[in-house]
Image (cartoon, rainbow, N blue to C red):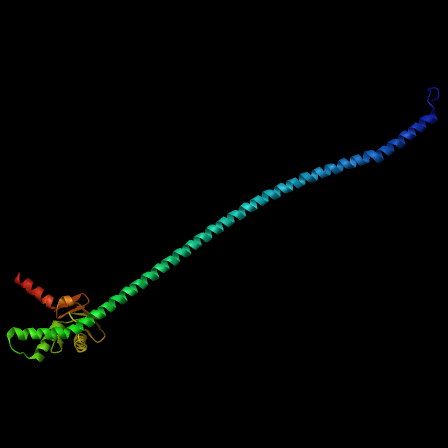
Length: 245
């Protein structure tokens, strides 16, 4: 080594120093740098992973938000439909109730008007009878049997003669109900006579109702089912007219 100009002791010392320096550089520089790079690598990887997780979370959140929004819209639409249906049902019920109430009021008004008309006609009945008798007496110029005249007028208006309904003579009736129409309201005893005569032909289980129609002038019309027995003055005049044609 000396022939080559190399001092072995100095060479070994240099080798030792280089080794020490290399060990120090490895310990103090290389390892921290490698550790720092590894940490940075891990941080970058973690950042990428966090970004991926955040992207997935955002996508899931957007998906859930859309689902929630769609569900909210569906619920809102359903509530609107239900509210509309309830409003329509309530409106129909109100209209139905209003129509029923209006119909009830009209029917009550019609019944009150009919009752008032019948009351007035009943009051006029005696006046009509008195005027008719007075006119007959004036026409013939002598007094008539007023009692007999009243009886004839009652027969004219009630259609009842000798306790029997004239139009029912010789007629057979069958049915569950009968309607009796008179020109003026019948007096209670006249109604009882008419009802008794009708029930004797139809049976005690039948029902009898009474209605006033001044247009028939006098006499009675009896309706039983689709059968009509016309004993009214108007009906008799029409029959006479037809027989003269």
